[in-house]
Picture 1 (cartoon, rainbow, N blue to C red):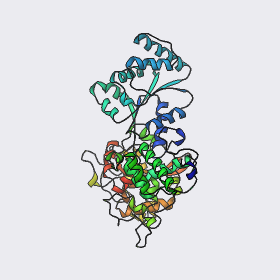
Picture 2: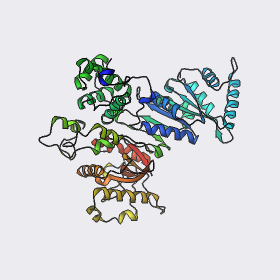
Picture 3: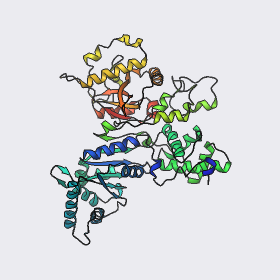
Picture 4: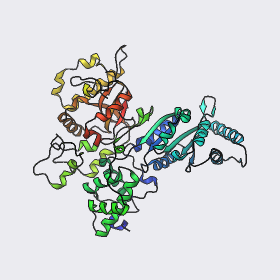
Length: 505
């Protein structure tokens, strides 16, 4: 109905998974890359969990499209299968004719077929959607199938996509054997308010829209709060908001249009804590996943001017209510940077990790975080000799050069082989840039200095698609668990702005 009004080729916010609308921001693209990499490793079962409507099925569909040709996939869309029904489904997908056969015969037939595929250089992957609804006996049968191997190679790989209830099911004592075989776990997190704007406009442009942003800051805030950052709810609200704007014959989506959509859907704002958590585990994550929210902090202004215009207040409204507005970098000129600029900053793919306590107080620049936020059980990482030798005169250089030097020294320390030297193992990645933008990073560092957190920020040189880039990380910790525990100690502004992840050295 509203397609011509907004210049769209197709509905932008349909809830049926259509891969052309796959949004790679907020770690979705990195999780997809990590899944492909994990499958290439060929070891262990993989689990992807997330709340209802967080995008698990879309990710599953994208994986089916992106896997290399030597992978053969078996997609189980209906998890409510008995043990025998699941075996029949897998056997049928492999082209076996086993009507009426006993379970033992079916298993033998499946193993023989998988061995044949392995000799042909094929790898078979079973993708189970809605795995949280799968009966325990069926899950156990999956584990037995995973145990099939030829020589040292597994014949079948398995990915479980499920809601958070899947985690509770796997925690049961009789599921411990299956849980022990899950070596990679990815958590689909809700979108933060700041990433949500990019998501909404990405969908609009994928549907053919070519104009400026149609969603006002107030509309985005309402959609974020009412949807809890879940994609399906955001799609429904955005779709109905477009319809409300069409009825008014306007091209701007304001808060009143979202309110009308909320009334129609009987949805009330109820921002919940799960929208601010990020728990991504597995060894591959340490190499492949990275946080993706650099544009928000890089575009933050320095101060709120007295003559600030109403349209410049978006950056301030994005702050949580308990953050003082007079902090350095909480508003002011430049806050209303163009959507295209922010989208460009949010774009990009990079490998790395997952979330989570500082270590010991040190002078700038250091490898460690302040003692007050250290976890009692986390041993401190002592500075290396090279770190101790850093001269305070480095403060004469730009903040960019200062923290870049600190980052390089941090990397050198982690590579040190000196015995008895405690090393930093992990850091909290705030965001990354797939190109070096010194001016924007310098602005971010000035704001970090204003918050008293400059000594915690490290710039790590990195390569993205052959180009020089930077990872911007916070603190240095003696273990991945210590880093995960430290995430909740991050400044509130950082928790609000960044989809953090854990970067391991």
